[in-house]
Image (tube, rainbow, N blue to C red; front, side, top):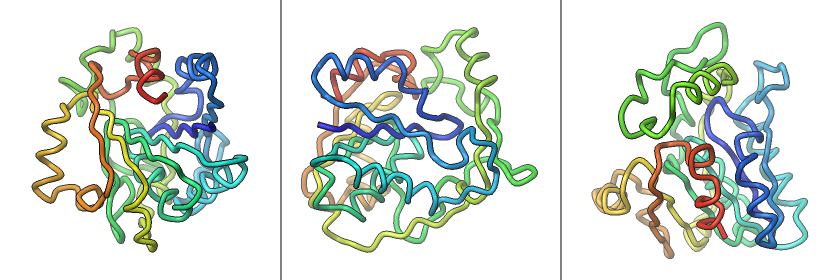
Length: 222
């Protein structure tokens, strides 16, 4: 089965380099996506263009696909389920949750000169980055791709309630499945509160398990 891999903010398809060989060895076809505005020199890319690129990858698959979103890109994975509920077999959300209709995609940090640069490690002190060494942090920051303003501030539009029939798995890295369940039950994640089939699984890592636990993450995806 095709497994589409969408990394979160400041990352491109190379974020999955440690996961892809393991998925292939287990008999699947991983498709790491590099979206418009992710290292192509464009700062004018929009959320709509990224959604279109994700849907093109879904449509190019020969059969049903699993769509994996990490962090902010959980919303991109969920938008794929909304637009292609008959084609997406499952959505996997790593370290994040989809935002609802009419909400900004990822307007989290300061915008400068039309982009949202990586803000440094201070906002991610604690469980998010506890398993990243100093060398890994320096490499991450040096490679971080500023997010175009049109992506970060783009508005999510959800239209098809059949998305709630698509099975969802939440991979819980810096938070626990119990915490995720509490947030969902409290109404903090209304999209997942309506999911008909929802599983929560744990992984002992920080926010970027594709970097720190690639083999374990691949096994969970399979």
